Structure formats: C-alpha cells, structure tokens
View 1 (tube, helix red, strand yellow):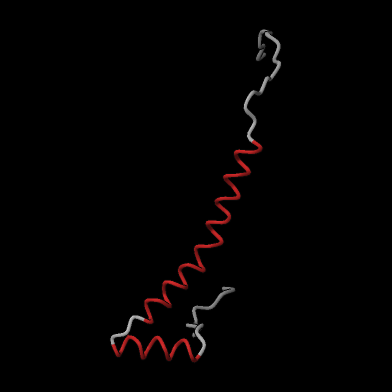
View 2 (tube, rainbow, N blue to C red):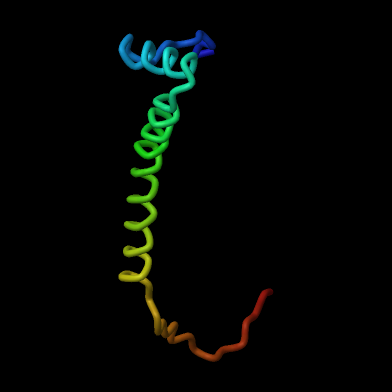
Length: 76
C-alpha cells in the first residue's frame, strides 16, 4: 500500500480557529470558508471544460471523404 489512511489537518491554525469559533457562536463564517473552497475546487474543472469545448468546436472535421473504391470484399 503506497498511500496511508492517516488523517491530515490541512487547515492553518487561523482558519481552523475561525471556523470552529464561528460554528460554536452561530456565525456563518464557516459557510463562507466552505464556499470559497468549493469555488477554488471548481474553477480548474470549469476552465478545462471550456477549453475542451473550444478545441472540439475548432478542430472537428465536418466533411470527411473516405475515397473508398467500390470493390467486392473477399474474406477467403
């Protein structure tokens, strides 16, 4: 097993303290922090999707002519 299942504390001390204190006091600062995380998470996926759509529209071939000759096909 290359990756362990150890829990990680990924927040800095200031962010963690603000989020915990906000939840205990009934503030909505933790909701803003969570929304910011989701925004930062979604931004690269949206940019990749837009780039893929532009690439698909720009480089898609529309009229492809295969120039196949009409010959009988012998499978033996």
